[in-house]
Image (cartoon, rainbow, N blue to C red; front, side, top):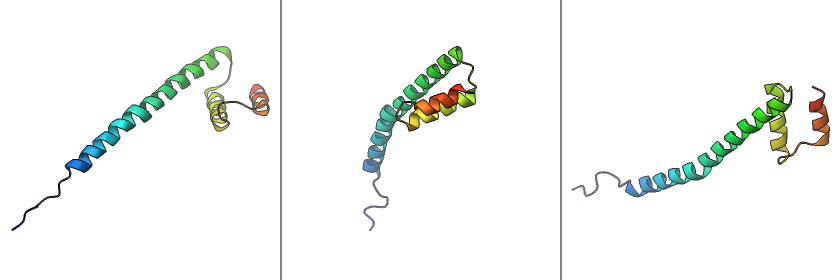
Amino acid sequence: MRWYQYIDMATPAEALYQFIIKSIEAELVGKLNFFAKYDRTKKAIQEISELSNRLIVFCFQLCLQNNGSLSAKKRATLLTF
């Protein structure tokens, strides 16, 4: 006689659900805030400069790689464009 025909997956399903909720609350909200600030900053840069979208994205990448700042050498290079 079979007492357990199927594995009880209630506990792993509940744990997965909690993991998804925490991910949405922590990671997704942070990412959305980042992209909202990214868009606002990009628009502000476009209003005060003639940089192309490609150069603005490049500038953002350089800043992110350097913990939020742009080195003087890179800044001088960007100003020549």
